[in-house]
Length: 204
Length: 204
Image 1: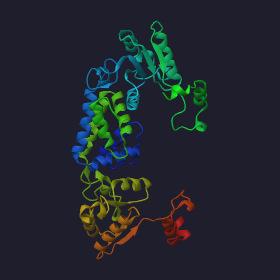
Image 2: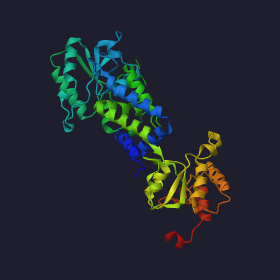
Image 3: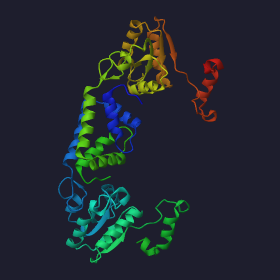
Image 4: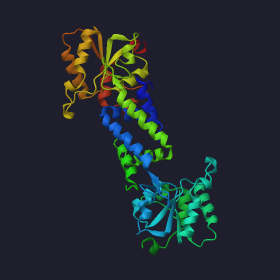
């Protein structure tokens, strides 16, 4: 795709660096900005720069935060002895939106994946181990994606914690609400049969 | 969707103002920027601001340009007496990419659409009429989208030009290459039958 201006070309190239945005979409976005007032682009740029400069990560749970401690950790109504371990900030937002969890989080910043060159030392595992003993954590809930890397990460942390006697759980795997049995993969369906639940537990 | 930081929320809101980008996509883009160095966001913002500030529109054809005359109008190899009239800059890029056109363009900046409050005076129709007489234009090719607004725009310009004797044409409508007859709409298929072409013209 040949563009009539290098200024345009540079902007399109910048947008196309973002994930899921190709050159055609990038061009549409840039032409949209061109249609708007110059102030729109200025405001857009300034908000992004301010965010990138000033945003912090919570010193306890590594969630995104406006200050040094995030709003969830600072909330005295949330149980400090129940920690939900997640891979990234998007997972925190997803679980918060369910309004089903009243504990605190710990954002690992990734999962152990030797193929991608990510080892335990690049993740926030050490601070998590510290929190478990310091905050007298009674339950550690792993909410990681169900794959080999996720399982490896759980196994690694579990081994590190073997002296602690906190309960380690993982979120339930099974058929999703609205999902259809016949389209479920064998692994999920198999696990959902072997881990079947008594009805009274299901509807409580 | 509740977000843990107002800085994050503002950035997501800014991205979500762009066309075709919802809140979830916007969040993914912002988190991507957060993962990168701060310099990446700074560069991204600066490139956009520079583009919005410095980009110009060609004084002849209203195409996007780095200077006062765009590279197509400045190219002495392009026929000045053949003008292809398009709605916006994306159309110029699309036609340029076919490498089938050796004339110059005229970007209307929209089409006449009373329902959207767009009348002839908001478009670059006056400068087009001037160009036709000044440059002794012999052919005006309309490459507008086939709808009522497009037809209205063609009709309006045609009436304005009635004293001139330049040839007025429109790009061919018909079944697209790779398209299937049975899925073509009736309007297109009907027009493609009534406007059928002799084979020698088709393969020339």
